[in-house]
Image 1 (cartoon, helix red, strand yellow):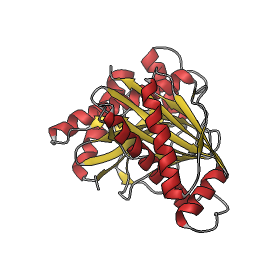
Image 2: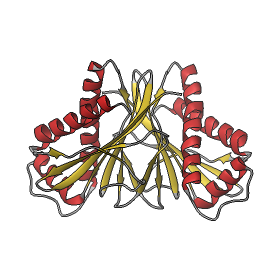
Image 3: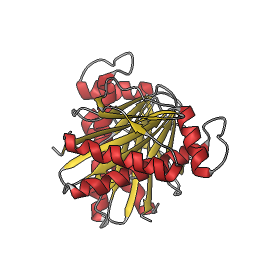
Image 4: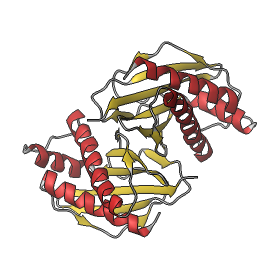
Length: 157
Length: 157
């Protein structure tokens, strides 16, 4: 995956969380993913494809982090556990982050179409990519905990 | 989801399993999905999008069923558990089934682009769709056990 593809996801995640959930986020150094274990307790997956490139993006939140983010989005006190409303919010955030990245990637002359997110609930679930390309992990810290954005994009065969 | 969209997935799954894995499959009556629990022990997810329609397709195999299918694909004895090779095979089957459905959908004047599959390992994992549209489940029986193909497609907002 080209290095120039990382920044669109990083910027989009920061923008979406700050504007939609009034949550300050601090990006950490991107790294390559090792293993297939999901990072957090609730994970959004979205497929993305362009003329030349295809792949998917994942956003995975720790429970404490997403409960606070959703509380900010709804302007309510945090829920005590992940429920359908939280899972839906992860779908919405996944959509918006990938939509933001898509807009940035279009400026690099890559016009991606996005599929609809799926959300997986569970800690330590094994989620693999059907790809020989490495997966980039962008970790983020918030006051309420951490989340990651992962992207795996490769040239079409 | 339009009823005419069901048959492309049904036919593609039957064709792929019969040609790639010499596995006779018997489609059962399609139904609407209730709840968010994954059907089998290993599940492939692939995003698909056209000009007007977006969504995703899921293929979920029981362990016994996929171990026999992979054994047929590799012309080896069945493995005793789901390993990376089995998970990769689920990615390949997901890709091929959705590719077959894409070819049929194109004949209905819906030109879909496909993303790259992700695979989720685990029984009873909660996998949701970020969609208000109902999810169609097409169950299949094989001599070695069962699997399902799910599709959730909706008009773009």
